[in-house]
Length: 269
Image 1: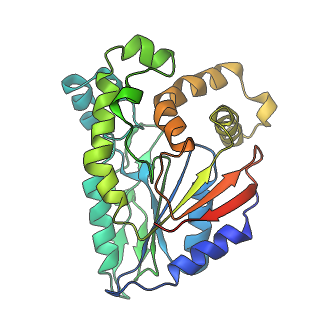
Image 2 (image 1 turned 120 degrees about the vertical axis):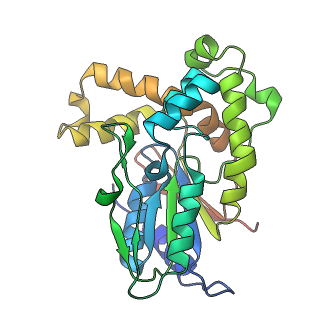
């Protein structure tokens, strides 16, 4: 995908706007799978001297998610929804980077998606020095909680068949309300990349998968696309809510099906 210079310019302006306390600004980038949020975050970090990590890098360990699955609901064994991240770890990284000096080396968490577990700490990448900003990207960054009456209506077969009483949905929405939303409120600026609809997520995610397999998108095996459809079902309810306006962001970039920016709106929060 090609990066829109307007978004990089906007991120650069935010990065170069100092905080009153002198700490590096915290910038969030949200958007569904395949929207390009990580690509923008990495490019902006490289271009402007910022540190970057993804919310995917701070997933709970497999053992921790299995404990959640046993204690709360079996669907919590699968990473993704609010409640399956270690927000305390994420904030600790922010605190370390915020107080870093020119010679400081700050380990940045990493998650091994093939092993479905956090990577060993000795393998984590290291950010050297004091960053100009801290950029955090993630599919649910900026999300606002869902009202209970809307939450109880299932949006797909996964919710109808495996969460008929809405216990899983209620639990991750409570985590969003109690933990994630207060954390997002600490960010200085947030950019949201809005897909044209949820329907494109399967195509975008399939393109990513095909790229990893060094295949053209049309050659992706049908069973892999089916597995992607099953996986994104875990994200569907909150993603649809965000696309319908359930997101708090300082700027919203509306994307077309090719991920080109067709509209950029800045908002006064």
